[in-house]
Length: 206
Image 1 (cartoon, rainbow, N blue to C red):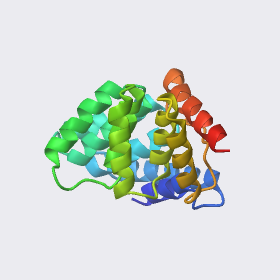
Image 2 (image 1 turned 30 degrees about the vertical axis):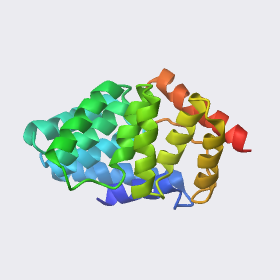
Image 3 (image 1 turned 30 degrees about the horizontal axis):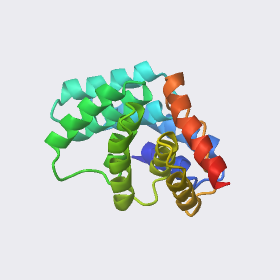
């Protein structure tokens, strides 16, 4: 959980030294893995932290697969597995894993879960469905910057530039950083899909 907290600090721009937060998060995740290598809760968050920060994606997926082999009914594990499949460039598989997560956990869901589904739909180029999920995500988690960035990019690719500008303006109210490297997305084509739309939305808003 400490590793996850440092990841959140980096994600939301709540640290003056993102590089230090990244290193601390990864170090804590690896410490947890050494202490509890067969705990599904630990495996899920370690896999996510390593995947988010650009560590070997095959290792991260191996960890989440081990997590789910230990507890196939672990709803949160299926959610994190879906997120990691997005990072790995497998949005269709991510959607399948999110569907399992939703069946296993009809009530207890993290506030940002619709963002994850929206991301997978965006990278599957199912833009209308992505918009619906991302807008709903912002109702539940209005301070989650990734949702704004993906939604702005999605609107830009749909040619809805006024709405893209509006989302960038809302993003500015929670962070000065509109652009990001998108390095968690390992597939170059999908990363460029995200960044090109975001660049267009940001330039229109500028």
